Image (cartoon, rainbow, N blue to C red; front, side):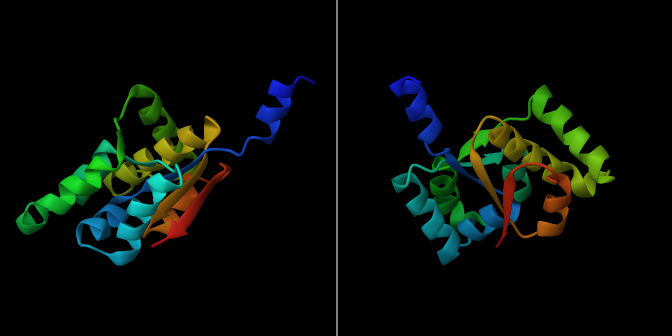
Length: 148
């Protein structure tokens, strides 16, 4: 086996953090745990991602005094847009989990984003307030779900 092949076998998987709307909301509200995570992740070379729809779900127009914190938070997160592949994965996840409707739609999109990252070889962790639904949507996929 070549040196390059051995190096690939022993290379640790890229870690990635996936934020749901509650994780984003807590960050915008100045939650110490979430802020520390956002500050620490880049130093550890761990990207943070979320779906474009999740940013819309987390956005609160009444929080005008926190616009600078909103901008700072989003500047450190990769926003994944909802393409056909993510939408199809989300539909499959909803079907498999036996869920449907608007209550689960954005969570399913976020689960699909996390699932796609994991399928591409990342060690994905979803930070969510709704571990039950997220675990249902991600059943059978190698994505870790952490309660916030």
